[in-house]
Amino acid sequence: MSDVASGLARLSLNQRTIPRWSLPELVDHCGKAGLGAVGLWREPVLEYGVARTAALVRDAGLRVSSLCRGGFFTSPEQAQWEAAIEDNLRALDEAAALGAECVVLVVGGMAAGSTDLIGARQRVHEALAVLAPAARERGVRLALEPLHPIFCADRAVLSTLRQALELAEAVDGAPGAPTVGVVVDAYHVWWDPDVWSAIAAAGPRILSFQVCDWVLPLTEDVLLARGMMGDGYIDLRALRSAVDSAGYAGDIEVEIFNQALWDSDPEVVLDTVVQRYSAHVL
Amino acid sequence: MSDVASGLARLSLNQRTIPRWSLPELVDHCGKAGLGAVGLWREPVLEYGVARTAALVRDAGLRVSSLCRGGFFTSPEQAQWEAAIEDNLRALDEAAALGAECVVLVVGGMAAGSTDLIGARQRVHEALAVLAPAARERGVRLALEPLHPIFCADRAVLSTLRQALELAEAVDGAPGAPTVGVVVDAYHVWWDPDVWSAIAAAGPRILSFQVCDWVLPLTEDVLLARGMMGDGYIDLRALRSAVDSAGYAGDIEVEIFNQALWDSDPEVVLDTVVQRYSAHVL
Image (tube, rainbow over all chains, first blue to last red; front, side):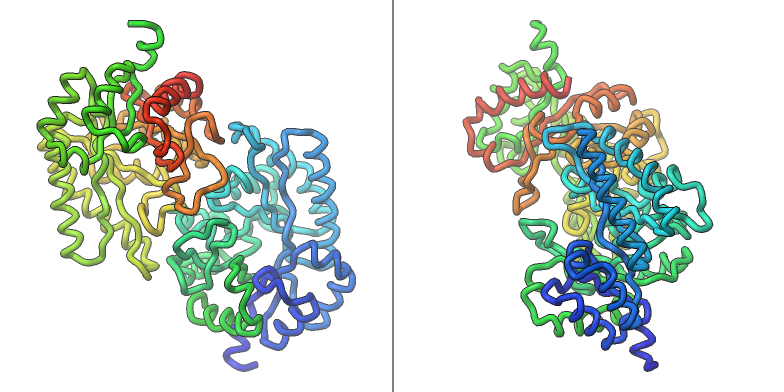
């Protein structure tokens, strides 16, 4: 293995970074480029077929670093909450079939017109109490993703790594081989003065590490405001070093939602991902 | 005093909520509406004259709940950093002349192209170490404002109330009658799972309490995304109750940056502020 290729052994490309590629194209390009893994989304996996996807990825010698995503547990309507649980159980089965390292959970925001943030968090807690044993039975790990506080009202009432860690500990008592852990997504946590000690405290509960960059100005749809590593304000190497020091030896997943990138030549995007990963993350 | 009027004794209108009013108009309308205070900005105060403004407000029986604003201490260039200190010393003199309850400090963001968040925070700490004794000499209080993490890169590397409190404690050892304290601005802190215990811990260091609401969708310029109390996701009464329980008995300042509001009839805006304050904050 060349120096470059061995340096890419932990690199994973989340498929939404290059949504124009089909699953076979994604797996083919990532395999040839020497990446170690891909991050997959449920919708394209279901469309292609779960078993077919599993075989495709395995035959290319790749891991599935994460399956995106479960979550959205915050409905105050019981029927909707239960439907979310059912959907998450299906995600667990898919993750088990794929051999995915974890299922990423975006827990959901607040109901329109609600000011009951504490109640919404409580419903997340209740959902995790149901899903943690179901995940353990299936040998699947649940990765709670704290989202940047900009998304607190509409996407995730879980806003800090510390909060995610405390929830994981509350619903899953086995820190040695945890079923419930956390995602450290640089974009969501970089601003947090507590992030360094929260990473150290998370230790074996770090189930996923994701990178991109915080760039300005924000786009009108802030979901698409993410930048390529090296283009913004995040000290990605410091975060990578911190998760490594906490014992994380898993994949490093590049997940960038950005319209300009989506409009670019996919092969150029992958080349840039590889180059920026080497320059700013490793 | 009527029930309504006595209920407004702590209400303060930040002048940027209705920027169309001149200082005399602002003071006249707020005084007649029964408010207890106004929040002022340095630029219009300097234009009108500091001593004239002080007399105007005093003659109307109002307090100056805050002077906005000092800060912007994060330049890595020594000359710029020193210029910021000089400007902040002038703000202290203005606040002393106005008898303002505090000077609000927005500490500043990161230099363009920088990933040195920790260094930027260090320069803030160094600035406060210089300004705290200068404020104490003048009998002026410095209120550190943590800004929503959305502003970490470009406006304030101080992102949580806990972080602001720890900085205040580090540069000012007198918790009984603090010179350096914090602003609790609902818009900036409402998402924080730690905000309740941070408010309790802040106690007498709470120097300002500001309210507006988090509304969606965000505007393209997120500075102007703030909503009227009651229009969004923040449980303002819970936050008001928490700061009261922590011992804060000062003004409750309404600060809303919103283009639609700025385009509205100022008297209607003030009426709405009073009504929403009574319905959602008191």
